[in-house]
Length: 203
Image 1 (cartoon, rainbow, N blue to C red):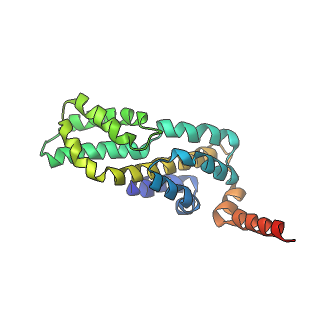
Image 2: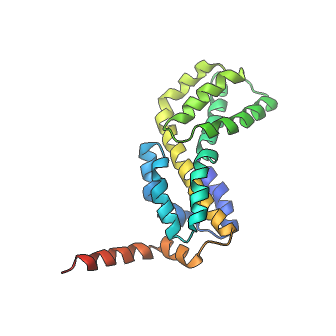
């Protein structure tokens, strides 16, 4: 998941002229909360507010971000495919290229039903694996010990992928305000908010 964000999103960020590491730092609070709660859906309101502050239009944010939590579950898709390969390797079951591609294709669709519930990625995997008839369902017990940690990284990856997708779509549509984006990432808005709050409490 880390390589996917740094390399995959890094290439897209370079293509669209977006500072990936600054974006990650700007949303660090939301990502940390999603990490501890193992669910990113609770961070949708805060993410919407921050994205609009960065210069994304209300229409784009309102469409792309909530839709992404149903159809853009990158972390869950990565987990399900890698979990299948891990189980196959642990049980010494050789998978042909055709079987791997078939499972990848199916997992990409079944991962879309794992949105909105913490730990739903494991449930989706448990429901999908027996229907394929390639790997024994008992292999899922190998994942139970690390499921909590996998759920945390899935939530963070899903949340950030949807935040980043919103920024990319906004830049692609020519709606992203470059000035507001730079001020938000540099922390100018936060300093202004703190200054206004201090002035308000002074007698």
